[in-house]
Each structure stands twice: as structure tokens, then as C-alpha cells.
Amino acid sequence: MTSTLFSPELFTKHNVYGVVLCGGSGTRLWPLSRQNRAKQFLALGGSEQTLLQTSLHRLDRMIPAQNRWLVLSPSQKALAEEQTGKIIGRCVVEPEARNTAPAVALAAWQLLQHNPDSTMVVLSSDHAIGNIAGFEESLARAVSLAAQDQFVVIGIRPTYPATGFGYIETAETMEPGGFRVASFHEKPDANTAADFIRKGTYLWNAGMFIWKTKTFWKAFSELQPEMAKLIETTNKSNLAEVYAKLQKLPIDIAFMEKTKNVACVPSLFDWSDIGSWAAVRECFPLDANGNALAGDVAAIDTQNTVVHSSGPFVATVGVSNLVVVATPDAVLVMPQNASQDVKKVITHLESKGRRSLL
View 1 (cartoon, helix red, strand yellow):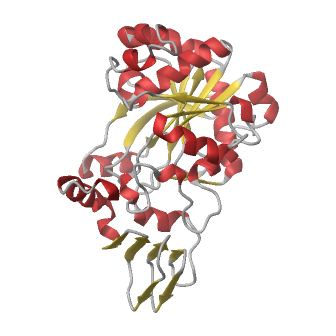
View 2 (tube, helix red, strand yellow):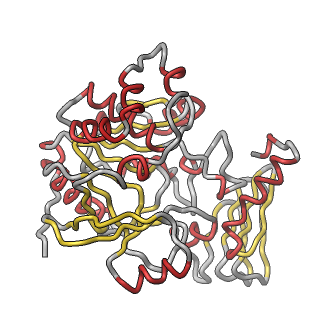
View 3 (spheres, helix red, strand yellow):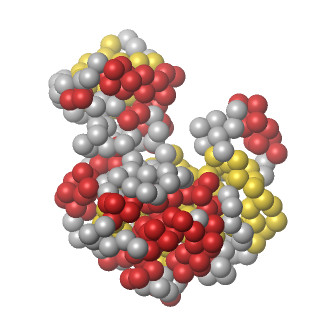
């Protein structure tokens, strides 16, 4: 068994920077999540901290505030700065959303100019993570592998045959505490996902990446030469013009699935992407009847239900397995197993031109 590697000194030694992607829209948590206040800017499940604040604070023992960078859109910058105050060092502003490859590459190029000997830890701003000590240890192992010029991804041990996540096929072990990556697989169908679970060598891809910035830029420039050259020409005056020319690609497809020397560290922590209201119930404290409650609510003879109000008083009586979400201008009621269908509401509102509710 790999011994414990975590220490704050390890992260200092390798000049570790946390690059937190903050540009998502989180529409599956409508009506609470909106275009002007996406999921990462919300406090859920009775928490006093927003998901963004929680994501940054879990880095407290690893990465100092000045080494925490946010990547976000212009419309999110003011709200992000309001919530993060002195716990970040820089905002990297994307002129427009063009998926994660341009976002990560832009941050990497700016970090390379800022500290060419840095190690880059790419994280999301809207995930729920339990067991912070396990999270710290997982990143310590990843940083140690990155020091060996590996491109490292954190793999989540699957708990069910999910079709909404990408999968990582692991091969032989690598020290400390990792595996060589044999292949990546995009979101599979149900039968393939079940087969992955049976084989036991597949992990979920949570979109957490660790590498030496200099090593990444060299490899990225070889695999995506046009995008890299464009980013290298950016400055304050031409960023919007240049950025609009970048191809919209996820970092997995643009880089991770194409490059060599890819390693995976299995997570030593609990994880959820909080991708639906049903997932909110799984990630936050429950009452004696299995309900996740927040706001001015009362759950009477109610079981296994999410009740969240940021507006009026909401009462449920004699129901189970529901999601009830109320804001000052909208109410959502649905069975939990329909949580992924919130996008149908978004489509409806867009078709009716009801922009004020988006």
C-alpha cells in the first residue's frame, strides 16, 4: 500500500497552482440556477457556503490563495470576485464559452508566463467532495506523478453503471498510487457501462487534471498547433478577436485522449458532480425521513424528498421521492427520477421567449 504523501511542503516544492473552471451554466438545477447565477454560485442543501467557495476552501492546506486562479466568463467575474474575496489570486476571463480545451489552454499559457516552473491542477467549481483528507492525498499522489512528466487524471470509483460520465480504462500500476491509462471512453450506453463495472478496471472521469505547465504546453502545442499558436498571440486588446477563432473542444478529446504518458490516480474521496436535483439529496445532510430541506419549508409525512425554497414558504404533505424547488418567480415539482429532464423546461422557456426565467 502506498504510504501517505500529503504535506503542504509537497505542494510548495512543486509550485502548485489550482486552476478552477468556473464557467458552467448548471441549467439542470433550474429554477435556482440561472444564467446570471449559475450552480457554482449557489449554496445548496442548507450550506452557508456556495459551491465555488467550498471548492476553493478545500484547497486551503494545499494551495495558497494567490495560487488559486478562476477561469470564467465576463458576466460571472463580478459575482465570483464578490464571493471569493481574498481567497483567489487571479481571474482568467474567457471572452466567450468555447468548451474546456480553450479554457484550460488559455489559463495554461498565462500561467506559463507567470511561473514557468509551475504545476497546474485543473478542478471544477461545482462538485461535491467528501473526505477532504482523501482529496488532499489523491492530489498529492497526482502531483508526484506529474513531477515525472505524466499527465494525470483523477478517476472516481464507479458506484453504478452511469451513462452520463466518461470512463478511464486503467492498466498497470504506477508509483505513487496510480495506474497507467490504457484508454478513454466517452459516455457509453447502458450495456457498455455495465460491462465496464463488471471488469473492475474502469473509473469515472471527473475532469480533474494535473501536470507540469511547461510539459503540458509543449505537448498541447504539438497536438493542437493551431489553437496553441493563436493563444500565444493573445493580449488584452485582441483576446476576444483571437478567442473567437478557437475550435470548441473539450480538453479530454483535444488533449488527454491523444497524448502519451497519461496516468490515473483513483480517488480516495467521495464525489458527485451535483448534476441534478436528485444528486443534491445524495450530497447534503438529510433529516430523519431522508429529506434534503433548505429555506422556509415544512416536510410533513414526507420521505426521501428535496424541498428547497429561496422564495415563499413551501409545505409538502404525504409525498415521497419528489423534488420541489421554489424561487420568487418559479416553482418546479417533479419525481426524482425525472431530474435529468429539467432541460425540457429550459427548452420550453426558450421556445416561448421567456428569457427572464432563464
